Image (cartoon, rainbow, N blue to C red; front, side, top):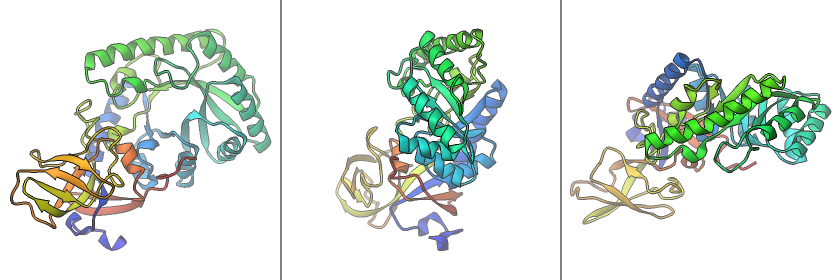
Amino acid sequence: MTTYLGRPVADLDSPQLLVDLDIVDANLRRLLTACRQRGVALRVHFKSLKCTGLARYIAAAGVDGFLCAKLNEAEALVDAGLTDVFIANQIIGQRKLQRLAELARRSAVRVCVDDPANVAEMSQAAQQAGATIGVLVEVDIGMKRCGVEPGEPALALARAVAQSPGLRFLGLQGYDGHLQLLADPEQRRAECLQSLEKLIATRRLIEEAGLPVTVVTGAGTGTWEYVASYPGVTEIQPGSFILMDCAYHPVRPEFGCSLSIWTTVISKRPGYYILDAGSKAIARDFGMPIVKDRPGDKVVRLSEEHAKVESADRHIRIGDHVEIIPSHCCATMNLHRQCVAVRRGRVEAIWPIEASGRYD
């Protein structure tokens, strides 16, 4: 693939995952400028990227750090020299806690907790490794997934962290993932503000108890500006805004879709044509993908290696190339092993996607 550097995208074989760097740059500028104006840090979610080449690219543009969903993602980032990493999840079990403690010896790693027994086990692992692990108490602000209840339960867990050798209490996470794709912006804003009231009230309670809170983090691409503008929040953690997809774009049209799948027409019939990419290359968990720059065409079926596209275009030919925008950027990145970065129609870089296909 290195022989494709500098060549037109049209020379690429298919299917191929593409990332348009001009659109990435525009998306980054928009959100970085807004965060700087509001005085909050921008920590980008690596679960959307899974590619350290792309992460290094946006780090050079000025983002303040990265967060991950999995321990393997954090290890990939640190191995790539990106050492300010937050695992926005619970790390459970002796083997994973040992890996976490070893990672903390060579990076500024932080992690979420919502259980006192996990805190005790993490403390033991940190002490055995001679490491210090930064810890955030995750507060359930409405998603009903992980996290402790706001208020006194969060304070009790924060005290447990602060009293545990090898751990450093840093603050709170409150993620409103249940709000990210709400289509009504007024409903999304109102429910987001209600959640933030619980999170910041918990911050005040912990600080009044004598524990400093240096980090309060949350938000995603769907709620970024409400959270970034809320007093008491120190950083936001969106990820999809870098790549975007056809499910998120109607909710956040200010961010362009930089991610696409380069495909080839391999068969045609009256009223439809077939592409050489299916569900093994294009995630469909958020719905069907769309065809880029061909508004009259509609993807109606994904098989494992084929996409059926209804079209009234009688001029499309076998061998023509078509770009597909997936409905879920994060899951699509996880299906591929390399990312072709393009600029103005030419291949600028080819990066491995080191964390794709891994669940540890």
